[in-house]
Length: 146
Image (cartoon, rainbow, N blue to C red; front, top):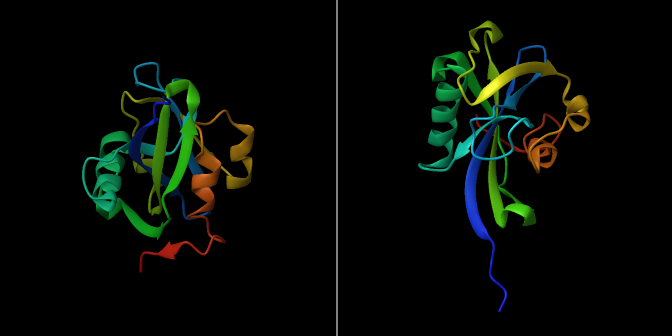
């Protein structure tokens, strides 16, 4: 009898600066999965998705609600990782940060880069990152928060 994959819901926040550059973060060796891979601001869903997004932004980047504007909320995306026997359900969000100088990394990341979104596929990212971004990109038609 085939076992079903464990389903885990997460939020992923894509942070853009006012010039349209996208924040990518390199995951540290201290996190539970995908060490060394590039990602957005992400975390396990422990509250309503939008609330969790703000919690993760504060924990991982030091950004408060006043530092960002929620621009888009995407439809959840399922990504299967057979090696981890996990089905991730990613709840994507896109924010604009008013002052990128306010971004501060915590222990979950070792490095940050501001890139053009078109460059994302050239980075070794966590599974599904490019597809999750497409759900909230400027040309996605993703649900605006306003």
